[in-house]
Image: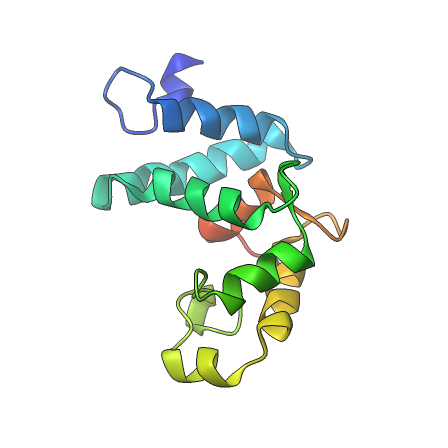
Length: 141
């Protein structure tokens, strides 16, 4: 278990790694398979950018305006309205949306697209696991 939680391979578990696994465990996605896929991508990202996990957790927490561990349309819309989210399914590969597109697009439309792309179970909400799966490159089939 400790080896699985140690995403950076340091032999120690950081607070961010612990929080990450606790939040994944509370998500409604098939945890065992999805967790290993998410963590494989995340481990690679952490080698390139050590602060990636902390930044992703901060993005999720900022959008979780109700504080219940899931994102809704209102919270995601706020992130686009405030310019705090710059990624989305309309960008090439689901990456960063160009400034020109962000300026001309309605934040709620961007939020609807993002919610649809990240909401794997069709609940109308995005759990931490679904958010991390999207950020790790996993897309709906």
